[in-house]
Amino acid sequence: MPNELNNILTLDADSSIETQQSKEDVIWHEINNAYRTKRILTGILGGIERLEGGATIAIIYYKSFRVVIPFNEMMLNLVEDESHNYGEISLRQNKIVNTMLGCSIDFIIKGLDSKARSIAGSRKEAMLKKRQIFYLDQDSTGKPKIYADRIVQARVIAVATKVVRAEIFGVEVSIPARDLSFDWLGDANERFHVGDEILVRVLEVHAEDPEHITVHADVKSVEGNTSIANMQLCKVQGKYAGTVEDIHKGTVFVRLSIGVNAIAHSCYDSRTVGKKDLVSFVVTHIDEERNVAVGIITRIIKQSI
Image 1: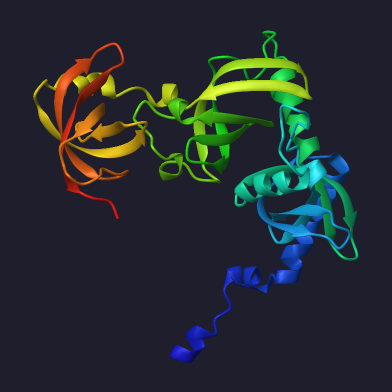
Image 2 (image 1 turned 180 degrees about the vertical axis):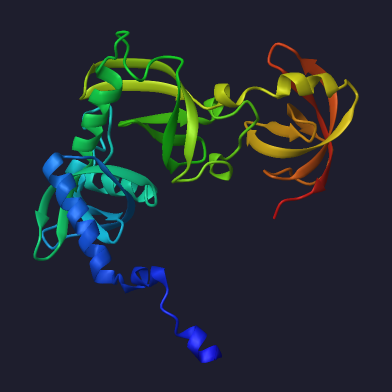
């Protein structure tokens, strides 16, 4: 009797019949439709390859298929003139694309080989199309979809210590650390990662045509400044634990455990203070204009290794 129960044919049995080949056939049909309609697709930037002729290509993975995008279709927009000395342009392009590995990429299919099931795409065409739709086309009120002071979703496509590069509907924007958070932020890599989707506030938009659009945006105004309220908890001569977020030209930037930004110019500990050290901080003055506590590091509680 138990063996008979194991062999019962259930109504959803046909779902298990779907093979990998049939799944790929469905996706390939979708890709063909996207090619005919010039629909924007989104994949993951998964690799960089150099061809035998010397050209370099980006590899995008769309579901189970590889999409090849030449670097000149990646819209990296490197200016070559006397004031922008990048060295060999191909090396610079390679470095930029390398920092973007793992991010989501929009693309439009430029060509298909049905026999080999190979795909060639263009990120540039997808970005220009999105720029037209979101920055230049207007709705019934005469406004574009993206305008100054609007909060929008953006993709994090690269992260460095002091800057995050985000794509906002077809436009790449560099957001410096000072605009990422009201908190001291010593390393943007600790809070932001390639592939993240974040909310940003558009501060300025200058749109002439799809090729010439610049956007300034920040993250901190969306998150809000909790330090203002937390500063009420901070008292002169009060002693608080804090974490060293950055050190610059002798000034130590500390984030106190009570949620307040602080700076110190002196450290009484005989050891050298370093980033991410846990320290004891005494407040000597509160700079209300900058909303910062000023004081002295009395000792290093725990050094970061």
